[in-house]
Length: 224
Image (tube, rainbow, N blue to C red):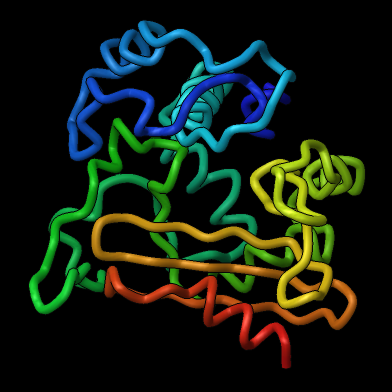
């Protein structure tokens, strides 16, 4: 679990699995088989390589441990206790309150979020809810102090100057300031969230335009 959380498992990212159709859908067991068919990039713990498939495996582990669907687990154990009423996991088909993704002037469909990307970018949030999520490390909400410390520790160097990976966070400089941060993207969508502990600032940027680079904008804001 530690290796999956820190991207040190040896699993590749989507480009290492050309047989996976990220637009899906896919049967869960078939998807796991496609991951297993590709040799790992390195032995667990011997390197760092960002891997969304690793987080898909973590979501499957949550389902087995909790004996309930991953989306339901997040709704009941994460979103509800934190009061994140504008958040849910999985496909957003048919919901009238979602921004539509764009690339250029055309609308584009989301990747499959019910199976292929489950655990790896399948959460829909409002900006206000993402600010609340940043209170997990910022205010020790939801988790014990020991778990927050493990979540925000510098577990694995990423190869970029001063930066390491925690559990679901990059831990390193943002515009020269200490930060916990992460970006996200989907077809037609971009996102970025960061907490700067020294100044206790939180940054959240969401865009439904593929050409926007929220991380670059956040770096400019973080420098202020």
